[in-house]
Image (cartoon, rainbow, N blue to C red; front, side):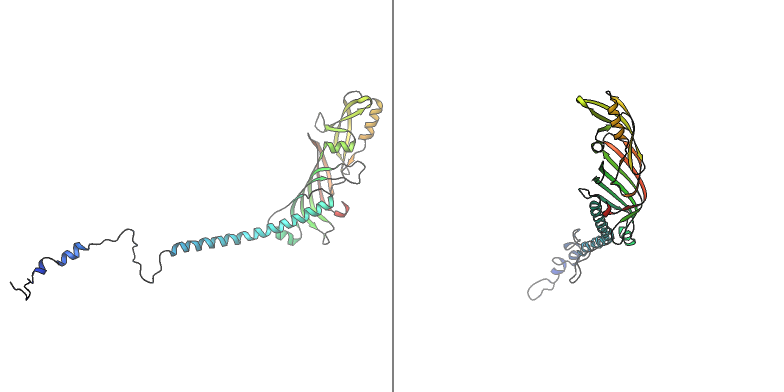
Length: 283
């Protein structure tokens, strides 16, 4: 056996301490951790955190597209609200209502309707329309209008609807004030009951039919006594009261009264018309 100058055996290093095969196969047998990325992070490479940023970009793009899609709707709603407000103000001033009516411009888009000068459909609901300038004024508790093809003059002096339908509610207290008798629902459809006060605190109840007649008037006919005894003088008074129909003077020009029906709380009047005109200065 050959020994070096220092007395070491040259083959000792070959058989024990630094076995190359053992070093390669066992001591550093390394498997990547599952928590580590498949690709090593290299200096200068972009981190994987870019994916959430891409999601945020897509979400922002989607939000912008939705906003752009809704923008015409919002603009149209602003234009409609302005038209509704101006129409309500003009109607209130012309009809003398204590509050502005409810106005709805229907159909989309309103912008193109306004640009053409004609609104396809407009709904107006007004309350407590007074009846000035009438010998027997009969206020309208509620008037609902459905106007088609509404246009206005260039000088705002009038507005005209190609056609219209309307319903008016007349409360029994207002009808009583117009007739001077206490009016309520009658015993049969189409009839109302009236209480007549006689001398010595006596009362007589009569019923009469209600109908629509020309000139937007409500007629009361065929009264009959249903309670108490009516003297001849009282009968003559009722003839004078009921012989004259009550005109409805607070209805837009062009609407024609078609029917009147009785309800528990008042009278329902239905109107239709063509070329219905609103003239604020004449209301």
